[in-house]
Length: 346
Image (tube, rainbow, N blue to C red):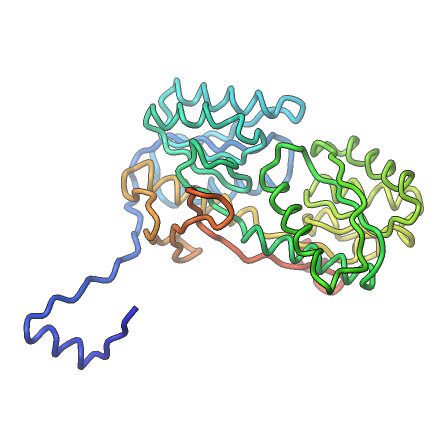
């Protein structure tokens, strides 16, 4: 973009030369009505409760006279449950649905149905892989960067060499699949040539299942040095499993976790370092995005900028990881270790 000095700009205006107007960031008009649904992967997970806290904060701040519902399925019925909730919200004429997708592209027909009925579908945390049925994705951080961060944490913890495995949530979790793929790509770099990824397993984001799958990995791979779990449920369950079995000196744990849930495991050396972002901010930003679109104040087009209250200005851009999809990039994430985890856990 060309830059003009104030003098040059004044000269152009003086001779009548048209100067293109700079796009202004949209400031939300408060008090508009929109009935919205916040739909996590399932209920009972602290990070999703935190996202709801952020959404409720924005709902109150924007003085929306409509309702904000926090609805989710059980872990055992997540895929069918999410589809059912979207279908019901569509029938009820909701204006916006905020979805953390746990159903892969299976959810696309229901989301497309919601759009046809006039609802805005904004994904957060985990998008619809194909982008079908999705107006925009509010990305917590750049997905490619998460892969590099996990690879770097593995390198640090393993001292540059050794065997590692991944314990993820479910095979249909688009966000975690993308993060793992990005980590696998990063591990191809020469820096990581002595680190071997031996397996990827799934704990379905259930504590007991994740706990048992972590122990099964240790039994299957006697030289395993690290379990990387990019899920707050999985990392805590894995760390507990290693602690309970007295394996923390042999098998370390890392991934994505909540400081309040990981502080003891980090201080005792089971999980030397891990990363995460602020889910309250994610819920807050997602609500602002959805409110603006559901009330007709923002179209959801690439290049549009808006002000999300206390969080500042954001812009809609093409999603580099998905063709024909759009995203809003929140950022940043934080790496936690024994030096900062205790303060963050308070």
